[in-house]
Amino acid sequence: MSEWKIKKPSLKCDLLCIKPNDAQGTFVGILESEDGNVFIIPYTHKDGNEQLEMALTETGKIRWDANPIFEAVLARHSNSIERVINLKGKSAELYCNSTLYYMSNEKASNISIHVPQNVTVGDLNISDIDYMYSVWAHNDIYSKQELLDAVNFNRGVGVYSKTDGRLLSWMVHTHYGGLGNLQTRKGEEGKGYGKLVTQFLSKELSKIGIDLHCTIKRENKVSQNLFTSSGFEFQCPLTFIVAK
Image: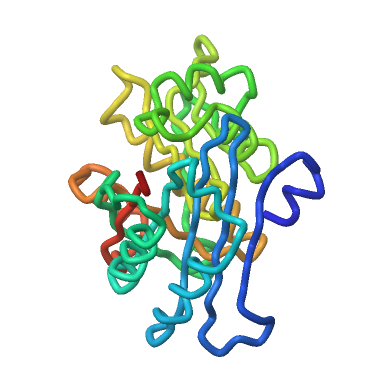
């Protein structure tokens, strides 16, 4: 995210820690979108919940009036997050239940990519962002600019038809560092394009030493099966929590 800020000085983001060599590994990542939404990624090691609560309570960097969204909250952090939200005079509301999947870059580097003759796979065209955003299941909390920034500053890849150039399936390396926004155009499902784009981007990111992870809604068994068959392994349940 610090690299994003260099490329886009107007970007509002902070990565906060207790001190550089904190043994608890406590940090709070904050991203404020151009439409005013605030996203927070909190983390601490197993015994650091008290420190995490203190950090969230005492920092002046969080705009609580913006009803911030806590992303990818581990189960062991949930009670601490909810206590802080209540302390700030807000209610903790569940946005969605999710799951975390992971694959090492070493494993991803060994993926074999097979591209069908009727399609190409490569970097996304910026002209496709409007369509991608219009059909995104989470466009109720994320702005189109977040999606555009992720594609511009990280990477996004797509499967394109050789016949008419249409975008058939796509995936983005998101603002929080994971894989996301996986979707296949309606009518093109069941042809392996989702798995192709997942494996392609995973292998590409492995070339620069990035371990892969993604969050998948708990009820989305289709995507869970796709990622498992692509080499990912389930790690733990997660929640996304809104402070209202």
